[in-house]
Image (cartoon, rainbow, N blue to C red):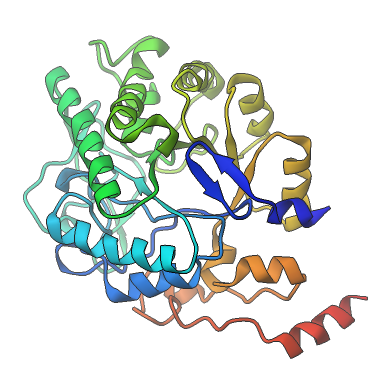
Length: 362
């Protein structure tokens, strides 16, 4: 049954060699100027056997940065750095898209290293703490509410970031519309108390992410654009009493854009909800095991399945799944620190050890 995980699949213009996707994961290894490092090149190269790699969240502009040492895609040096990453992945036969992540109000000012403002739909601070440069969580900054005209400027920043991503050799982009970041802040009535065309009724609150998706589609083609949602996820102070009332209209409207995919963090059975409201290609994620992932694909509720933590410690995850080999454990102490340690130093599987593991399961 698990064979379906290893079958080729097409997501818009993206032709994947298998249905196993590496989920986007912040790793805090960018260098000065938020430029991708040689360690990042090696990290992504090692995992290129995934049908698709979705990069860590990458800021489309200086104002989009909220966390320490996250990469950008708004400078020439950043574009050149990401080009090394995409070239390395493509040389191994892989596909890679860039997740564009504007943190909005989820920001510690000390993490920015420049004078860019903290912006949001409304001047309401995120109640959750965010790690500062030393990794210790601290209170977030009070954001300034964007004016109506400025919202359009941010939409164009995303479109330019999508162009930059393709210049950097990426196969497409994914809009991070989840986890409490800027598009999610516009969607959520608790963080969006605007009275203009971007606030109030649901048709106004979904306008910003839809405009971004439309702008990026116009810039690079809708079949190279995806978006990620997590409707029931309270992360980064996202409290919503009725997320279905928001995400239903968003999904139905986004489906009309003929995008490459929607990427769902499946919490509280939202996969059925997406299936009912989105007539398009789906990637699902949610602490899945291979058997359950294959079952979802077999039912046709998703066309690909993404894995996060497994890919941290298993660069050859696809091969381990195929051989039903033992999975290495994550070095949790070095998820966000350590340079190469806990990042590029995970070994490939040991065939002899795998045989012993397989015998022990029989």
